[in-house]
Image (cartoon, rainbow, N blue to C red; front, side):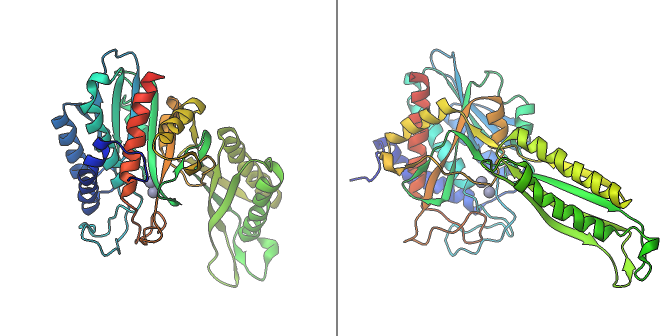
Length: 392
Ligand SMILES: [Zn+2]
Ligand SMILES: [Zn+2]
């Protein structure tokens, strides 16, 4: 008896899905270098009879057409690994030194390929089109944006998108399905302060850039505590400061680097401006100059209410209601967010931790691994969701 409601087809596909996951795990490739992974995906989809194309260097897109082609649903899976040396003792250990699938993207790829196979076997039941998007470089520098620029959401036009992340923060058998905000934006700011250096004993001849920097750092703490609505999550962190050369020299310049995390694009813009305002006015008050750079990386990941309810419905056919967690959110970031800015969709977490088996290490840890039972659960929820999307 199965703990989860898996169809005969998904159960039969289990060993093959695990094999694909392990093959990819053995051969991890970094962002935009996923040539072998890309080839494996390309060939598998081609053999299944998909219309296949390469998008954004190493990204692969597979299209299957339903009988009344009015709508197109996209399924997104990321395929890249991390620059990390694997320390697990498993027979499918990474064969590429300093590279490791430590986030579960090997599993995402295997799930999407298994789903593609199941969808193909039921093509006669399929009403609309399904576009499988295998995206490179999620960890960095980001593959979603270039894929969109190259037209992955067109021809046929994508109406909605779904995707999943295997998630060791929640146990196997649970699913994190949330509408609205899910993951934070992640940005970087760089502030250079230009004062006037001089002798440590003659401060009146100088503009001490370290003192200016100290005031700015202190004032930045008031953004979250005094400007942001306390009910809205936000982080402003100064992670690195650089200045000075000796005890008796007043520093000419100072540099600080930090990160901003939010769940809201307007708030993100406000914080960007506020940091500059504080920097500008403090440096001016002290007679110093500044330069300011704010680099926007991934925007917040925001799920559509309707699509989240669709995923929940699909999941309820696999697990019981108490296994669905509707408040699993994280300050981590994801470039699935770019797709979700363009089309309504839902990104959800598939619980993959199994403490008894020691498979509960955090993502990006050299001992990361997950319970492969999650591959079948992910495949089942995905497949259910695809058919439900066209039925609804
Ligand atoms: Zn990751
Ligand atoms: Zn990831």
